[in-house]
Image 1 (cartoon, rainbow, N blue to C red):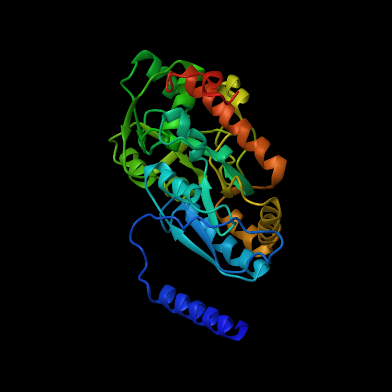
Image 2 (image 1 turned 45 degrees about the vertical axis):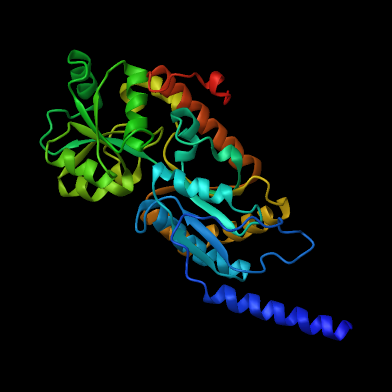
Length: 349
């Protein structure tokens, strides 16, 4: 009897494997079927891991995640299959991972955007609904104008905006994007108001400034440095407490507006997350692998190439950073009138 049952079980398993291999890839944004969470009694990882990137292939987030995943998978002994799921300011990927099983086999590879979702009523999720595996680092950003702009300092730009409320234009990527958020900071601190003109990407926003369609934008160091060096754009201020090595001649915004120090350091950040119910032992396994990958000289060179400020945070340190970033951002957005609810009303302070 046992022999017959064993043969039957083997046949079922073979049929299941063949069926799974023969199925076409789904075209919908459907998360892996929710299964029982991975037990610490079993070996993890026992199969390949999915890494879901919030933004498109070849973009800043993607370019940081792929080499890190390639190094981490050597530590884990399985492949990390990186996939891009774009849309909704990163919310499509975020929701996808949250809808997947909390078993450590679906990772969210993202940027700062989810910390703004509830403020902007995009979706009812933030990184509080996930467990941080590893916070890689953050970026310094700056105020950028066109080559022939009349504004050679952030003070000149702000003074012009104060004299002509709403007349100066800023190229943004829509609500929740980097230029939108930093412009809200400028409004909160200086009282200056601007007309925001949305574009479909940071690249097209920068082009709008180069061509003179808009007066300025906000750009990461890695994205506009080449245009700055070529003379197509010029940084006039850096949102940082310390000088940026590759832009050492550009003044800090605190030099002209000391009140900005209340919100600094601040910038876009990048990290890897799993659903919050994931077994702590699995989170630790992942964190150890990504920390080893992060410390590899090859990856440190990647961070230097993209002008990323290395952080390497896990556990409570990562959670504290995420909370502080969210509270400071909410404070500035509320003061600027960009959101209607205070941090206290939003339940984040």
